[in-house]
Image 1 (tube, helix red, strand yellow):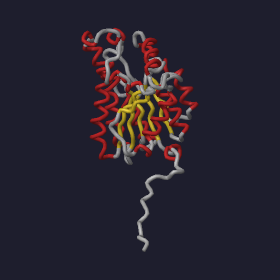
Image 2: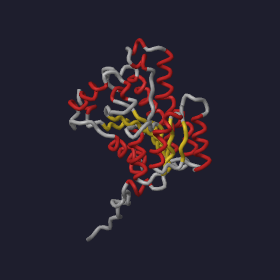
Image 3: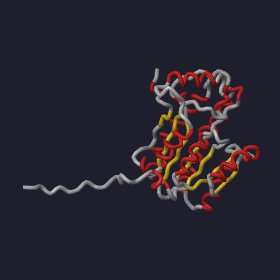
Image 4: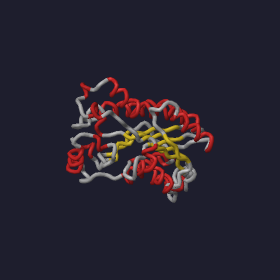
Length: 272
């Protein structure tokens, strides 16, 4: 006697690729400064997988470097964005609403701390420096989530960039450690609040990369050497590897994940 067994529901198409799932998706990428930026690695991979992009630059000085990259990526929207300039962030999302009417993902890859506070001890950080670091590096992500929510009518994904120093004490990372720790906590709370809207939230934590922003950290070359020596992979990751992970996270392939900090650091975070 043969028992009739109902077939399992088809929950995954083995022929599907991330690119197939990303075609037609529309997203905002914030934080490109040049071709070495983590944000550029993300934007390049997302575009390669078929996503349509909105790209921002910090100011007129940055535009000369970012606009050619945005044009090469065939970005449909290109705009200035300094999150410390009142009204600029709202203007970006208003433009997205006007042109696209919806949004599928946001990549937040910006951070800042005044050098005098970044290079000093955490307990010596000025109030103004701490508040500025928190505003640019953490609060701006929450504000983007607030503005993106009504545009993500069919769900979506929000991704920000963190660092190993949020969880462990890293020499010379200083006040950015507490700031990134706050950012990772913000990701968890935002994930809980936006989950009912089918909006997923992640922090991606690359190892140290030779970007313009990272060069402001004191003794950065020592940090690079430490990572290369201690990481199980025996090397640094590159912006393309970070971009591939981000593309996976914003695609429907990661629909069962939210609130996580995803490490892309060659295993460095596992080493005591």
